[in-house]
Length: 315
Image (cartoon, rainbow, N blue to C red; front, side, top):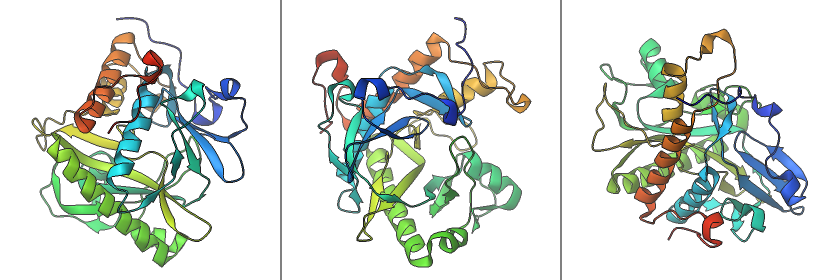
């Protein structure tokens, strides 16, 4: 096995990937995305090839990952446009970030991670084992990891500072934070978009187990879907043909990387050390999962813009 790369960094310590190439003012750097100012009303949002896990940005890059995320988000935005406005103004962007960036509206972001779950797994599964609830929503006895829920549920989380872990909270906590009317609006939008997307994903052989959205507001108060949407970074996609509650949950998302770090890398998470970089075969397998998810969902062959100068948006 090839040697692992150097240790990961906390998100607030990572340097931007595209600042020098773009020569634009950097407004914000997240774990994967970088925001640059174009003018008072517009931002350039760039999806990098970085990958994060357990609140670290890994030293490894997944080739073409940012382009997959960006183009898949655009594909999904088109398919839920009748449910909610989105922040995208244009995909006509500077050449160094072609395919991996959009021009978007500058919004007042709502400080809530809006999570929809149709299946029980991840932090929801851990909470259920202790309380038979997830974010204050009671669930029936007898569920296992990977169980389908009786109906999709809204399980929000606080929007933590960069490098900190988001905390699952109840709907009542969200209402106390942003007001009851806005909390109801983002809950209803979250469930509506998830329900639409889960149906589309099922037609293409995927179980959409859960996903998270971010919303912002325009000056007139309109709620807008922002950031990325329904990508392998923000969602759990399982192979529907092998889905087995309590057993096999074949993922087309970054759960593959989490599993490698926890079970095969030799990293001791509880020691507080940064996780290692990914060996070449794990990078390649991760890229393959992201590309497969894109192709199976959109029906298009993924051709990176950088490879031919064109590539482009999935139909």
